[in-house]
Image 1 (tube, rainbow, N blue to C red):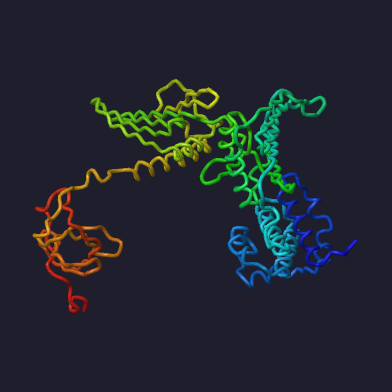
Image 2 (cartoon, rainbow, N blue to C red):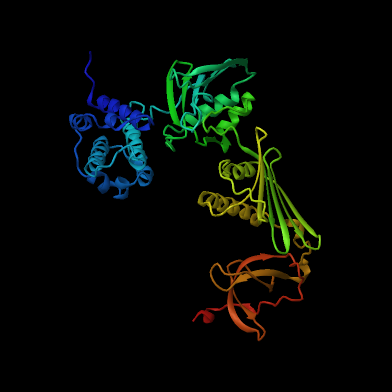
Length: 470
């Protein structure tokens, strides 16, 4: 057998440990056994990360966030290998597992880059390439506090390029400790184009998936291209994978017309309609979000019966807002009068009605995030062009409306000026009831007459001269 070159040996080393660190089932023994010996045999040394720090900055050796900012600039195999060895040694010295969240992310990032710069194509070996032929996805919910002996816990989905689809559902069996087949469904898709293009794009650009939670179940997907190459990815069953702002799990459910697929997020049960009523002192506020219609309705009803109604059609935004709500976070069912009354309906037709109880920390955090995003929508979508004055100054008047500021990023004020002034000009304007004179800078010029007309506007006195700045 031909002996591997040093570069090939390092590449295999990088691939092996990248696989280990991105596998949520990996235990400490697997990443620790003989690691120091292997690093030394490959010529790597413990330098305290000094080469990396000197070439970039100290934070890159301490935090994954900063390492990711410079990782694509690293092409020195020795430097990166020394950094990996040193980072591992520091964690061991501090009795800190490299499988903890931050070290794990650091190691994944470093090992993938080491695999790239030691590969012949200088490309991550974990990015999907070619034409997708077969998809095999296993989604398992055994970390979701289910009754394993009765509930469906695993789904196995296979999609072929020619449109053949198979879905197998499994339940657990505490006696045999084996999964038991509940049902097997086979059908034909007219086209796999949408699903295959989305999966090819996503896994062709992202090879590292953060392991979000170990108790939320997991998913594992195999992508096989037309040359027979197999790439495998895995992650936690609570992840929102998106392609061009489209939720990948939802896309697959919609294309297959199977609403209860676990896919990548395990969230086949979701809120489709949310209603919130707030009983205030002078008015009653009502908020409704509807996923199917893509609408947000906000209504205020005053004590005298007058109503103000706002309706927004924002499909993507509504989906994101509804996804903030956790079905497990509910308030109190108290029958006594409460200010915030909530009701919702899910995709599967389940309903709930309760009052918000802000003594629950998780509920309060969720509510604050939700309200901030609602406020941003209401603030962003105000009046449009219809309410702007259609009246214009005529050319014969040789006057323009100038918006000026008195300080950088200050408030805008309207003044009448003579035609010929330019944006950026400094001018002298009258201010206040005594019309004292101040310097101001023109920020905008137009011939649109303000909504309140011209009678209240003062006129620019003159342009500034060098003497005004002495």
